[in-house]
Structures are given as C-alpha cells and as structure tokens.
Amino acid sequence: MFSIQTLNKISTKGLDRLPREDYETATDMAHPDAILVRSYKMSEDVIPETVKSIARAGAGVNNIPVDACTDKGIVVFNTPGANANSVKELVLTGLFLSSRSIVDGINWTQSLDPSDEVSRLVEKEKSRFSGPEIQGKKLGIIGLGAIGVLVANAAQSLGMEVTGYDPFISVQAAWGLSPSVQKAGSLDQLIAQSDYISLHIPLSDKTRGIIDTLQFEQMKEGTRLLNFARGGLVNNDSLKKAIEDGKISYYITDFPDGELLGNPAIITIPHLGASSPEAEENCAVMAADQTKKFLETGNIKNSVNFPSCDMEYGGGHRLLIANRNIPNMVGQISTLLAEQGINIQDMMNKHKNDIAYNIIDTDCAPTAELIEKLKSIDGVVMVRAIPPVGA
Image (cartoon, rainbow, N blue to C red):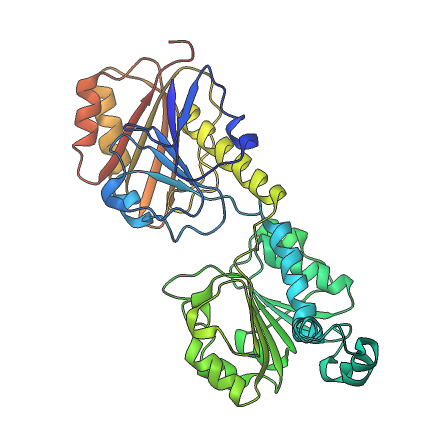
C-alpha cells in the first residue's frame, strides 16, 4: 500500500488513476510515499523523510525546493504539455486584447449612463478604441516547448508571420512545429523584427529578466509583448520605461504584480492560463500516472531533476540507486552486489546534470545490510528496493 499526500485539491480524474486497493490519498498524512501538488508553496523543512517523489500538476516547479529534493534523492515530476492547449487559447486571447483595445472599450461602455443615448455615443467614440488586425503581422515566439509550438502553429493559421527562437528545442517539439514557422538566427534578431513577442520559457537564474533595457531598445516602436510564462522574465522597471518611450504599446501578462497595476498599457490577467477544467484534469492524470509508474517500477518520465529512465519491468527484484554523477560509482555498486552473491540480470544507468540514476534487476532480494552499505557509498543520495509483484 502506497500513501499519497495531496497538498492541493487534485482532480478526481487523476486520483482515480491510483487504485484504492493499492493507494491511500489524503491531505493530512505523516509518512507519505509521494506528494501531489499544484501551487502550494513547499518548504524543504517540512518534507517528510519517507517521500520518494513529488509530482507537480503543472509545468512550473518554482513552488518546490528542487535542489533540496535532489540532495535527498526525491524525484520531482512536472506535467509538460498537459495544460498546453488551455494556455495557448489564453495567449491567443492576449494577442487580440493587445491589438484591438478591447478591454478599454468594454470598460468605457460599462461606464456609460444608461439614460444617455448610448448608440449615438458609441458611434461617436468608437474610434478611440480602434486597433490593428493581427493577420499579416510578425509574431516572435521565444521558447518552443509544448505551449510555444501550439501558439506558433495557431498564430500561423490565423495569418501571422511566425518566427521562433529556441536553441534547445526538443525533437518532439520540432516534429510538431508547422514548417511555415521560421527559425530566428538569434534572440536579438527575433526581437528586432517582431510586431508581437510572446514568451514561453521557464523562469530560472539564467532567464530571469531576459527582457530588459537592451531588449526593449532593440524592439520596434509600438511592439506588443505577451508573457504567459512567468512574471520574472520581464524587468518591470525597464518595461514601464519602454512604455513611456513608446517601444511597448501593450504588455499582456498572466502574472499580476503590484508594480504593474494601474498602467493603461498593461493588461493583467489573474493567472488563468491553466484554469480550465480540462487542463486541471490532464495535469492531475499525468502527475498521478508518473507517480504510480515510479513507485511501482522505478521508471522515470518528465522529471525536472532526475534523468528519464524506462526499463521494462518483469515483476521481479529491482534495485533503484541515485548518486552524484562522479567516476567509479557503478563499479562500487556492482562490487557490493557481487560480494553479497547477487547477480545483475539487467541494468540501466542514466544521468542528468549532476545526478545519475540506476535501475538494477537482480536475481534475489538485497538484504538490509547491503542496502545500508550502498547508502554509505560517498555520493549516493537514494537507495530503494522494489519487491517482486505479489510479494
């Protein structure tokens, strides 16, 4: 029986993927095997020692102390692409909002006195809210992951000239990208040529403030900037200066900030990108499936801190070991197994950045003494034995 703690309300469609005869789920749990979370801000101080994995039902993991989890051998999952269509639809909405002064027009209309001749006032004042069509305009997409690709393809089908920039585009994303989408030679080139720019990259130390004074200076006059990725990607002070200088006509963001409120050129949306029932269900299902697969087989998919690792499981004895990616780790592990008379039937070793992960199928169960010896190897951060199915 596995215990799963839910730190947010998780869609029942996701929880239904965890059979009740094998899993118990609750919000209050002292010794969970895994955690399912959405936006709850986690602290490394309160993660129970029993936790083997944390699955974020969403793409961003800035609410999870990933580095601390890695040090403890905890696998952190996210759900890339599960909410992609929901976010894509909101980005397209942002494109139209940034062009046609729709929000200003609606607010003005709502302010009218019903006793006045509304129709006459509307015809007289509607020119105040006119704006350009998006068809034929140039859209630059920064980041071609699951969401960026969907936005690029949809905008291209709406008649926009789309250019993308992503030096780390995955093979899967490249396969899904419309051949009509152009590739920018550099970030500077994309910024300088675009009428609209949409951000679709994760927030990290390297990307924080990626749109700053220099980037604004390179933009066309009246550029429309959309940020449905993370708020910290844009420097707020530089943004407000760019608006004053006429470089930015509208900034549309899904991440409201006190510094951005009250500016008529900034439209703040209350983080609605993934707020659709379909997206919440898709994220929950993916998070639950990844958790279940890892707990039962040790296989890993869509981890932000561990390598993807998928080795067919026949239901026998399986040993999982995570370690720092340093020389002679596999040799030390195999030596200890041999000393205990344990034969390796199959093995997979993968690494991601500073962490390596080993799946080892053996002909018999490792003893408690062996597991402690494996844990004592300098650089090992996690050891777990999976008993045979039915044991």
